[in-house]
Length: 480
Image 1: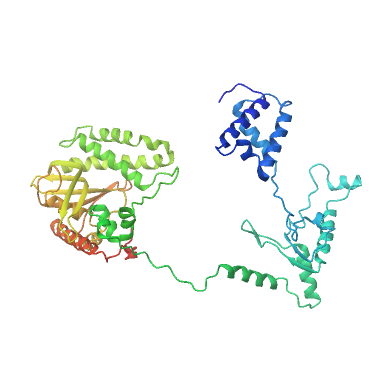
Image 2: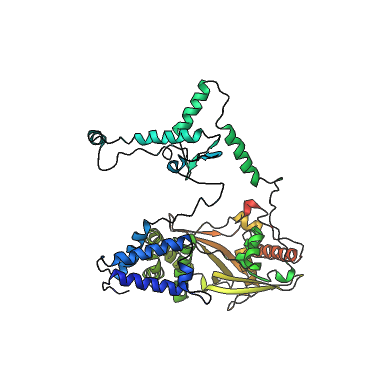
């Protein structure tokens, strides 16, 4: 937008022409559509007054015009037309003084509303007002009391107030408190809240159902051709713990939207650590250089560069990565003596025969090492807490056992079919200690793989039956 100052009249005229052009349609001009109704008439009046006053205004930068226009329009109120009903009128206390009504509803009976708060004003103090012979602010309370008495004397009156305003409790107007005290002192059988209870009960009854029926848990049963025929090992775990979550993602294709401008969390931190270690191992698949630690730090600095835009996260995560890097290089030097080769982020798959047709199990292992004896070691990096040995044995954390089953079947590209000798979680927390190695279960890897594969086959067969529902968290204690 141009920085050169323009006459306010030119800016306003150009603005009006633009909005009328945008509002125009094939059936009507922009002016016909814009300047109608209560809002349109108020806007037209404002535009006319702006054009008249613009000649006396100083030149204005176009960049400042929107803020100036907003400031000028802020004081304008659009007042809906009331009083058009032949039997109903909404009036203020001043207008109602000379009116007579068969039924009167007095509203706003809260302190601060009726009567309004008494303010002396910014110019004259109370002593100054008294010295000048001006009426004190309290006189307005007397007028408000007079108006209330006039209205309260109508043949039929409803007194109303809001017990809360914007969630904040309010104080009843002094008129109500005085009437309540007077009735109690004279032992009159009047309860100002009795009618309130009755009217509130009526209002609540409008939305109260005749019978409350609890909503049942969702148990969708899609046809067999809509059910997934391939899943990753991580999605299998979701399937076991919360079938409905799998249904939402794989059948309905629903994906949660990322919050706007959300702060990075544990998932983003894990992704960064995984990416740094993957690049390091791809760069040095066989032997480590003397400056391996410096090389990993350099790779980590490149990977963590985008997160510097979030200083709070970077200040917390980067020191943890430095501790992880020192531990990882030391552990890797010790481990390389027993390895032939390491593979990172290696994809694999295994096809299972099932009642509904072949089912494809997919995986991408963080790391698979070929040991000197020909067996395989499968490693999964965890920046959070890994599954317990009990959960792995029970089959509710089947990721590594299923990857072992794929490896033993020769399902990983570039890897020979071989027995698995080790399943391990490397917990890379960056704390104290920086990392630990935890075995996936106490049973032999082959036994865990066979059990996980048998459990998956049973799960696939069960859900190949169209009558099997995708229940929502059937075991709440094991829900993800």
